[in-house]
Length: 448
Ligand code: GLU
Image 1 (cartoon, protein in one colour):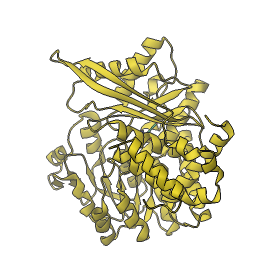
Image 2 (cartoon, protein in one colour):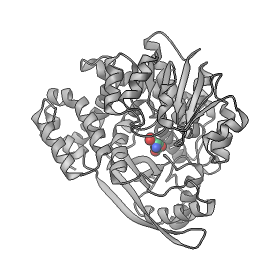
Image 3 (cartoon, protein in one colour):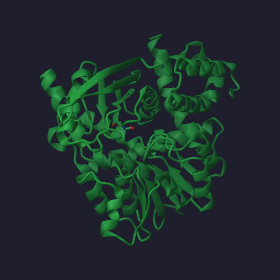
């Protein structure tokens, strides 16, 4: 173990033993503990009052069977999860992920990160995450609906608009949210804002679809300002082609950049003159297709059937928007060698710890996920506000609020980093700023 404080070494060891095999969760906790060590040294009251021990233990974990019937009439069984991690500063809030890789360790890592991310938004939302090992890929709409209904039949017992408000994440978009909302409303006989990312006809917020990607670019703009530059004329590589990647590409292009590559789990497309985003939207949002179909229309683009190699492409700005640990040390070194000046994380924990270390030690502008991708959940909180008011704001108003929030997240992260002697280290700054608000609230609430 490598902490200065023996207290943290013991805590990390206990956590690893008590959450055996949950490597992503260990990784997420270790990063936060490393960042907050100087805070704990300065404020021993956080240690005396067991704030950190409590923070790394979810308030509640719900794990359930999700049986459903496929189109051929066979019964299928998946696992459902909801980890209600922290309700210190507001009701539990965080997305649901439907992907075959989902197990308790993934949901815990995501839920843990969500505590700090949500705190950074400045809005009153606690941290949670959920999901299932169900794979929507290749399933019919009917199968997805029956799965979502079964999932919500159980989940509905544990959530509510003042208790826990789930949303989307990988594999959960407008279609899945719609099916789950319909089932919740039917079971509870109540029309409430229990989910965010809803359709505009039934309580959704404008800008929510675009929010994570747009927010990521607003955050990146703030980082670039530090180096006296901006998106204009820059070459951008974006991994992924889901909701986050698509709207990051849209905003980066609006700000004058050229996005030259995007990917899915099969491979990546490199289009030197700039990706045709309308076509990506058609393939991914309308047809739920694969990215190699891009070449049917643009045979001049290159397709490489290995998504991890996307970081070999020369770029000024890299936006990893696919999934956790998709960008390793070797990729980080390649990006730096090729002249990349900024990396901002649209996905949750896409860079390995070694990659992050590499960016920081080489003076690359680095926007960690908790800060850089917080625009999605922040706009979810704005959706909750509008639902409480039974009102909806126009696009420009929500977009302006999102931008303000991202600028504030940048400022509070960079100020916290500076205060603790780590100027420019937004990883430490975001963790510290997110932590202090939750920790102080926990001190006010007593031992709960
Ligand atoms: N899944 C998103 C995230 O990682 C959004 C969560 C939400 O809107 O509640 O922050």
